[in-house]
Image 1 (cartoon, helix red, strand yellow):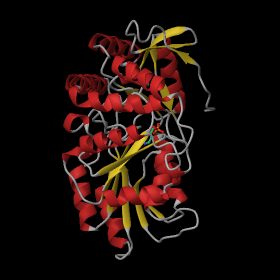
Image 2 (cartoon, helix red, strand yellow; image 1 turned 90 degrees about the horizontal axis):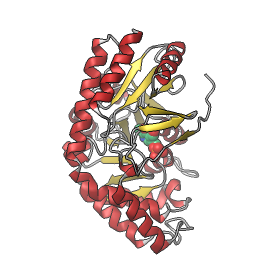
Image 3 (tube, protein in one colour; image 1 turned 90 degrees about the vertical axis):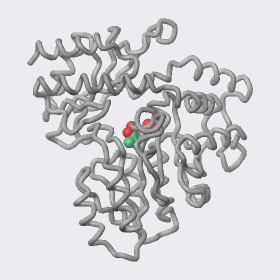
Image 4 (cartoon, protein in one colour; image 1 turned 30 degrees about the horizontal axis):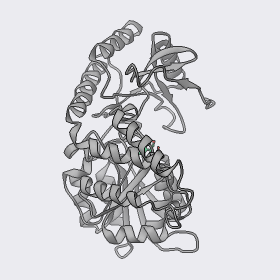
Amino acid sequence: MKRQLQNVNFENRIKEKNYDSIIVSGKKLFNFSSNDYLSLSKNKKLISESKKWIDLFGVGLSSSRLISGNLEKISEIECLLSKFLGREKSLIFSGGFLMNSTLIPALTNNNVGQRNDVQIFSDKLNHASINYGCYLTRQKIARYNHLDLNHLEFLLKKSEKKKPKFIITETIFSMDGDTIDIENLRFIAKKFNAFLYLDEAHSLGIYGKKGAGISSSGKYEKEIIVGTFGKSFGCFGSFVSASRKVIEKIVNSCSGLIYTTALPPAVYASIFAALKLMPSLNSERKKILENSKFLRTNLSDLSIDLGYSDSHIIPLILKSEKMCLKLKKYLETNGYFVKAITSPTVMKGKERIRLSVTATMKRKKLGQFLEILKNLI
Ligand SMILES: Cc1ncc(COP(=O)(O)O)c(C=O)c1O
């Protein structure tokens, strides 16, 4: 399938709270393809804070954070983020793709001009940004079977004892909506004295204590938490949270922090406002979980393969590009916007329609969606 950019629009999105609709080719559709899980991209507090910071600081910081772009407000946000995640220190980055792809080489001492022999163990279904980061280390990567901790342990046992080790995984997988077994993963990491790199992109804001993610259930001293603000935080940017020592190393070695312009003030402002709001959003989180369960149960009753999804990301695994495009077209005709996810994003034979559930979706609308699917099956 040839990838194409498709123009979209949003009609009276803020004023009329048209949060879940999207306009595609002039037609208003119900959007099942957004990662704005808590609908914060349209939140009044985020918008007004962003406007305020534009008035105070302008629209750009015009320098990297290590030159003259490190606006003092940024460390206030990073302190609040560390407190929220229960970690020693945090750093805010530009987009999560840039962060993962440059942070993994930096942490493993495999930046340009440096070579360090480390062993990386990465889940086979990790996000492309993690895979890029792993490739850039130019180390041999052991890719363990998806969520298979027996396989991970088998590979760790085979590895050289003395070499530093990194286990890298998403906590909720972006295309499958399934979840890691955090307790056993921590147990294995401790047993082999490995660093544990957890990408919380799709869990943050929804799961864990006050939305602090799957990893907020406990702590392991060699843990590195990363995530993006482009999903449940509704804005842009990303972060890493870890021990003071690890953060110091990143400031001194990560090209994706050193050689890029700081985010615009308005973006820092929206991250700040979202962070302040996050603990108070329990009813929104509850609604996402209830609606996700409702959808998953009813879709399973229709004998649709949902893989092992146990979250708000629900794949309809149709196993063929043709079937995905057919269903996409049918749903679009009936008022729903979905995306077909095909190879190479997912493996051939695992093609799917990916649904994501947001806090503002109404149960009635989800019921109508199920009726429309029933009519087809
Ligand atoms: C697991 C995961 N990590 C990282 C990223 C990249 O984040 P960003 O969109 O901020 O570049 C994504 C985005 O899709 C993701 O799903």
